[in-house]
Image (cartoon, rainbow, N blue to C red; front, side):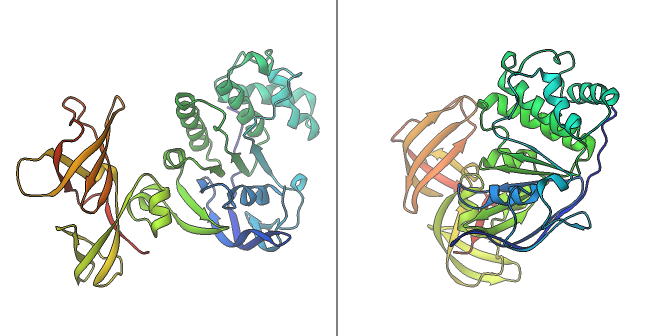
Length: 355
């Protein structure tokens, strides 16, 4: 395949973006290593899309510096940055064929006509659409249209490829397939990619690193596993995957370990720099085991809801420490509603959290 990668790093140094009195991005610093895929994740209004648009040059920073590779691009317009963006809406020209859409950026950049067609065909082959060049966008499925948008961005051989909520218009099954395709292309070509989404599962699936944003600032940055297993605070714990947030008591701290009691259940957990006294615990739904009540051990509970979802059952269990959300893969013998159960906690998926 002739399409090459000129991957470059992206750095933000204390970048702020204000719209009048409203601060959309507040003193944000991070680095995206060349050839990696980093996702900006967070709820609506957290600043993630504004951050992406500042990389593209579609918004200009109010303060701070933005570098692509070793070049300071803070004041450069979008036309002078070697960056391509894949938009949420695809932004395909409906009157142009697929090949014409993919060729458009190459044509306006002044590439020789003799090269444009071959480069565009390479781009379509790369995203699995070889032979679709003569079709109109309206003749393609949503997933195929998204792949055309990716091909149009790839053929420009950008230093950085940006994705703005690229899968939000697709149904759940198609989202899973297209995100796998995007990740495979990114890894095969070694592209530097910055990806914006509010979908936690999507972020966990595609990212080398995730930057979680909240109220215009970075709440936590790390690998998908680090964020899931070691959330920095209550916001990240609740936002990355599902978590039951409950009160606990740290009984003792011995070096890196803490003896913790949760409703009478005692566990040894990483102390994470916390000291004796009241604490909060994040419990992942998969870390909770249920058994029909037949003994006095474990935490007593009552099943209030049971929802069958094919591969697993979701339970809502009333306990002395509050209502717990439980995900159980044991679908052969589901526990009926209103059953008395014994609740047990795994060490994996139970984390001390700073309030």
